[in-house]
Image (cartoon, rainbow, N blue to C red):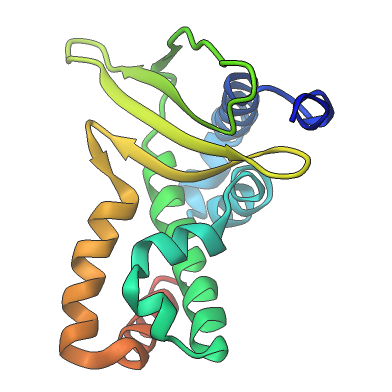
Length: 187
């Protein structure tokens, strides 16, 4: 496993820091343009942030038992629509960024570790820091994010709860259709 780690592009803390810094710097530099045309944030998120995420793994975790029951076509459609939903959600949240301080907490990467959490805090003036924790795992050549917890709330768990209720009510095909409609509305 050590050769695997040696071949990894970067350590997980640096990956989160570099990706965040690049994205947030771009947002601050283009603030006027992005405020005027908010839809432009989506391509920025898509090109800088999302290559660091493993949407297939996130989708499997979100759907749980329903993933195993899904057809290949349903799996592909869900991953595509879930990814689009996250682009829009993350992009909208990033538009609120106005130079808050991000503190990257120290991390010890145990030898041979293949699953880690990078802990950060976002500090808003006059308010308590908001913890944002990134769960990553090591692929063959790099670290990928598979969950994000904001103030202790896991994105995967949160979507699993709401999507399970939708699947019980409308089946997986119904959930996918709702995601398609929701994503289309936000264009």
